[in-house]
Image 1 (cartoon, one colour):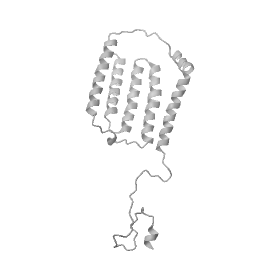
Image 2 (spheres, helix red, strand yellow):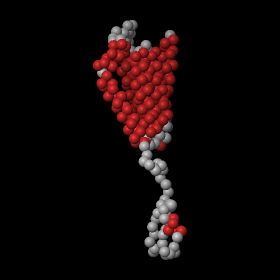
Image 3 (cartoon, one colour):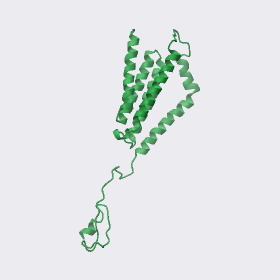
Image 4 (tube, helix red, strand yellow):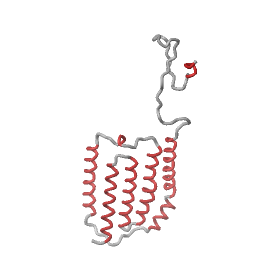
Length: 202
């Protein structure tokens, strides 16, 4: 076993542990942070496999944009982020479906690429990929960046509060206004606390 094999196993174990914590965490913010660690671990796997360009794209697009966008969306909106937001009666079904898909996809990948041995990879260079991305596909790239920016601005707009809005529901204290406090048939009017105090004192 070479040093690259050891590095691959270490990075893969860290990535798998972070992925498990992503789906088992009881806090959405923690789950998003573990998702960022998982995506960074995938970039580390690409780096160990000598796919430097894919590793950098993984870091820039997924860790630097998607995971950060998730965090902004969670923290800027009023969505519940605690345990009550993740409680579900279908966890067993979700676990069974996930395990089945994992086994199925793993078997297909091993059956398709298990015996493949490649010594030299022929294909476009990193410079060719960069030229194609920023020359031929620059418009879709910029449209995607504007879409992410619009989603971030939308999260900020949703999180804004109007003037005087505290986000909490205040208790209303009823104040009874009547000529005779002992008369049950008198017209009672319920006002919020602080309003009509002068009339009561008078």
